[in-house]
Every structure is written in structure tokens, then in C-alpha cells.
Image (cartoon, rainbow, N blue to C red; front, side, top):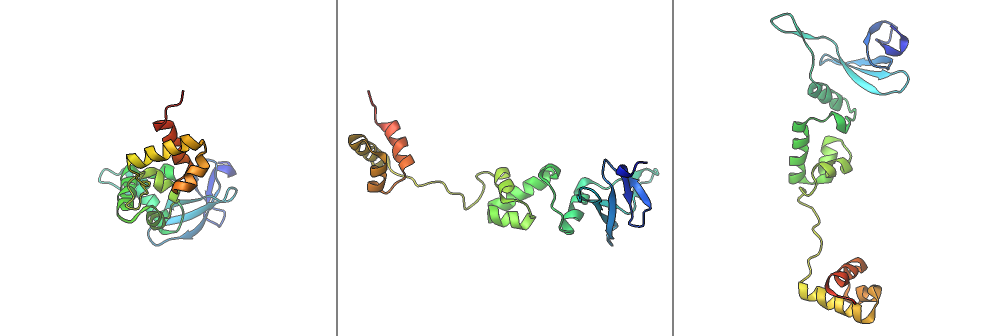
Length: 174
């Protein structure tokens, strides 16, 4: 077994084999898991201290969900690629109740990821200011008459982008 593919328990005893990492076990945890850190890239991973056996003598490996739950309990960030559909659904439902930022803090994940997963589900979602059609046409005609979107935006207290969009939509130029 090459040193790049080994797991050590801290006393230079090889415990197992993994990808291209050299894991050194940081600490044993009571729940039957051990937290290890790669000697070279410093990434962290969890390893089961024991394996359960079913009635046929087959080894029952821990599920990824169990592993992720342990890693989260130890304060290790779990990446997006490892979230199951059920866990994502739980995040989306939480967003609809408490909002994006509170959900990101609750699940210890970036708000940008939460926002992508739950686009438009937040109770605090900004829907933009709604203006009546007559007001939009009035602003567009005024902007067209003076040929200046910036001054029109200041006069009517709306964004220059809105004036530009309304002018394009409601004023026909030849």
C-alpha cells in the first residue's frame, strides 16, 4: 500500500485505504465515528469505527446521510454535491418559512446556494415596485419628448433602467 493511499490512526498504524489522501485520525468520537484529516491537502472526512452486520453476515455500510449528519455535528461544512434530494427539500421548505439568510445560518451553508435551490420561495422575496400602466406610459412619453432618460428618472423618482424599458416598450420611434 503506497503512503498516498493510506489511513493512519496517528500512531503510524495503517487503518485502511482511500483515494489519494493520507488521512490521520484527529479524534475518536463516542458515536462510533472518527474524524480524520488528510496530511497533505488538510481535507476532513469521517470514518466509521465499526461496521454493522446483517442476519446473513453481510457488512452494512453507513449511508452518506449518516456520514453527513456526523460531519455537520462536528462543524465540518458539507459541499453541495453531497446533499440528497430529501435534504434539499428540507432546506427549501425552511426557506419558505424563515427566509434565505436564516436558513443558510441554520444549515451552515452559503446563502447563495440556498437562494439557488429555493429561487422565489422566500417570504421576504422582493417582487419589485408595481406601477400602473398609465404612469408608465406618461413617463415614457415625457422621456421621449425631452430625449433624456436620466432627467426623466429623477423627475418621476424611478430608475433610469425602468424609464429606458418603458420608453422602448411604449414609444414607437420611426
